[in-house]
Image 1: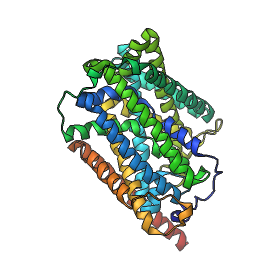
Image 2: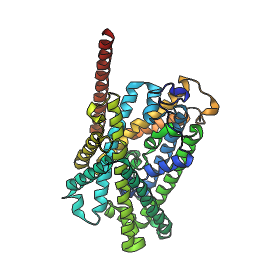
Image 3: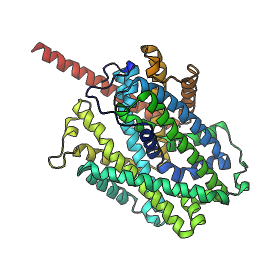
Image 4: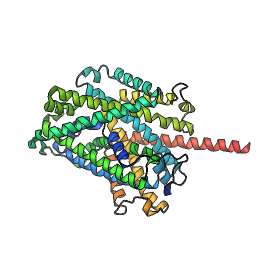
Length: 445
């Protein structure tokens, strides 16, 4: 809980503020560039062909609109918790509770999508890994990462650092050497498309732009939030957007209509044509390490949400247990890895991407609306905060675009998400009634 979040005070038990602009920008780049860009160019092109670049521009515009809202709210609510703290500060504990639970559930969906993306990427070399041995492969992944993180966070952190370099280097090399191999004819818009096609494809592609909500989770450790939050987020996203656009142009420009033949690993084929067999190894290893690092990072960090929730009485008490030898939340890690495994086995990559994206878009919508609400909730000192220019234009545009993307969901997906939100609301109500009853019993004594 924030003491007075509207004026920028931090959560009880203040953390040391050590993260600057460069640190936040690197966090945005590291978290955002993941599984999506290695696979999604072909999936999006399947909807729109060469016109898929439209989706990148829409995603870029939307993520910048959202980033501006994050920047404004992040300078008003400077305690730890990121999106959860932002939404709770603006709308209270109920929506904060929903945001918290949607967040970790969306992380499970995202992890499952990453695992499926990894099986597809490695399946380029050994197809049974994405078919016959898929469940066993996922089980091995989750057991290994759970074991690494139960033994301590150091091993997990080192793997995340290695993954950052492994995914950026091959992508940059692909861009540098691929520019001269683009065929202009492959970039011509030859297929017809509708606004609905663009919406559906953009909803899928937006998965590759997710990550701000994780990057700002350390909001209580930013040196100077009014400067670090806007500059760190916007500079990191600028790099990501430019890299993504370059990769899409090179992939489409080199493969053209053949892109659909390599939809499970399009960048591997591009690298093969650029660097022969060495290129396949380079991009596949980069993608695999990136996905492995993403999974390891999630299984390192997100169980701490369950652990903290158990300590606060939100989740069952056993999730708050600590391993006697390794001093880690081992039961929370095991449960989280088990949920990841179930989603990975029973979900397909594209389906998991859509559900994960839609869940995070709901959180983004909450932050955008929080930017509007906090402007009027309590006045703050102008020199200590960042305010988006143009009044409410940016938050309103972001709201309309998010709702348009969510409108692209199918009816079963909308019904499923509605049921999940209703179930979480009932759980919150029951917990509130139980806590009130306990307080009353304690008061009577």
